[in-house]
Image 1: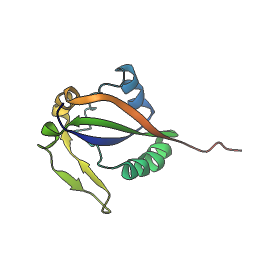
Image 2: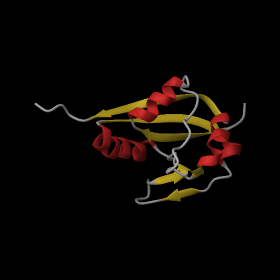
Image 3: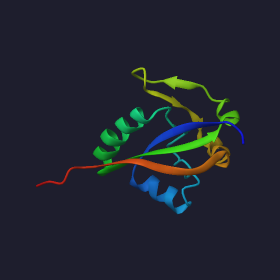
Length: 119
């Protein structure tokens, strides 16, 4: 079996529903205003985004984890976009189907965040 890299992605309710419809095998195509697919390198960064931004925007966010063949991911640089753990890959939208073809196993939900109930 080929070597893999573990990627994480903070995900909102609409995107995770499309992942669910794929049998947890593929990411949906980017929308016209989303030229880049941004998986991140670590769970902590994904949890910050899901717990803060996704919950703020939609009331729900989750952290997903998935593995991709290392040989494929080696073509992309890791970019630091803030603190030392704010690291991510920038995959052009036109290459997302190729990334999907390189996923090994399933896309897993490993953490979920919800807006607190008013009360």
